Amino acid sequence: MLEQGLILMISGMGTVILFLSLMVLVMQLVGAFFKTHAARFQEQSKDVSRIRRISSDDSDEIAVAVAALTAYLKK
View 1: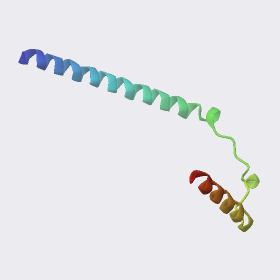
View 2: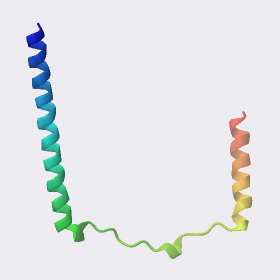
View 3: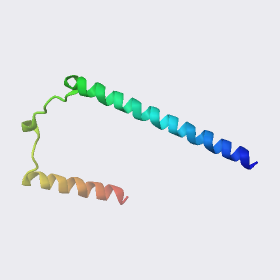
View 4: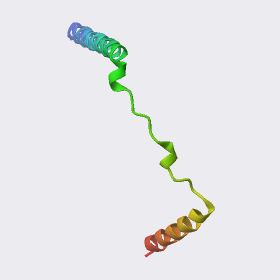
């Protein structure tokens, strides 16, 4: 019984080591691929000037929206 447990433990640990080694190898291959083909996967620059900034006028609208949500949730 003890011998079967040790065999099961060793085979399980071997399976885990094999899987982890394979995973590390695949990750290294993927990393090398992305290093050599980095130009294909670069994000396009975003136009930040179009983003609307929150001003003092917007705070009134936000307060109204929060008050409406609070009243709705209290029903």
